[in-house]
Amino acid sequence: QVQLVESGGGLVQAGGSLRLSCVASGIISRINLMGWYRQAPGKQRELVARITNDGITNYADSVKGRFTISKDDAKKAVYLQMSSLKSEDTAVYFCYSNLNVLMASRNYWGQGTQVTVSS
Image (cartoon, rainbow, N blue to C red; front, side):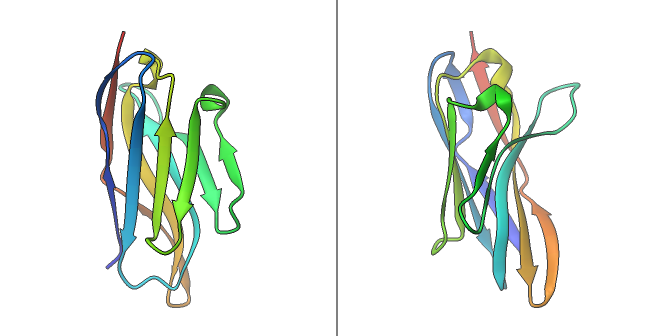
């Protein structure tokens, strides 16, 4: 059973910073991709940032220059450092991973962590 467990959400003032963490556990052969999505009330879930096994990163235009994604392969973890937070960053943030369990490639999601930015 593969699980993604997020931590680090909370309430922060506009202009502040937060760091999200996500750790994958279970019988994992290979992690191909890890990333973060977010969903604000009444909106669709959207990609925030992702990082491949090779360390290639992609960011949503709205967070470029403010958010940084990184990973720790040994810990099977991905992090999202969020700075200069804005009220529009308020959302539930979900960790996502595409990984191999034995020979099968599958997608997994965390349970989500709330980030609230007060103006």
